[in-house]
Image (cartoon, rainbow, N blue to C red):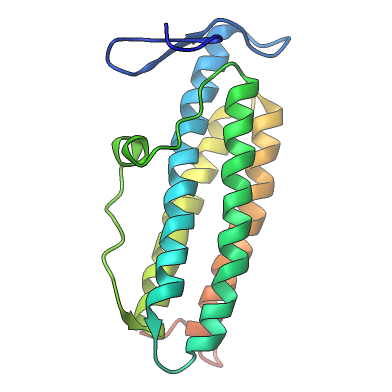
Length: 180
């Protein structure tokens, strides 16, 4: 055993917690913890990706995008903390190490380094789409089991969708179409 509250198998996979919140079974908590752990890795990855873009975006519109990204990074970092603390509340162990993020993620690493505003924003828009889609699936999967975690994810979704809209606004033409 590596930590009070959670037994970890020899392979590092989370086992059933030794405690959870009142009114929730350990089996249900295990399922919610697994779902939230995936979301935690996704949010950590998103915060690092946004900061990477902040440092590497160039060209026309640079300062607007550069300044737009910092508040998004901070908000996503808050989501990371909120999600990790919910995992701990449920009796789990939040994993935020680089290795655990790489091991958990099912998506490719962000591929751009220094690139133009438009190039980065198209890629960031796609990243947001993936995070939002997976957040919605997670929210749907835990709604009946844990409305508290569902509510947390809904709040995060509202912010993530707004940030995606901010990104899209830089790519949109007057007709409301996303330009290539």
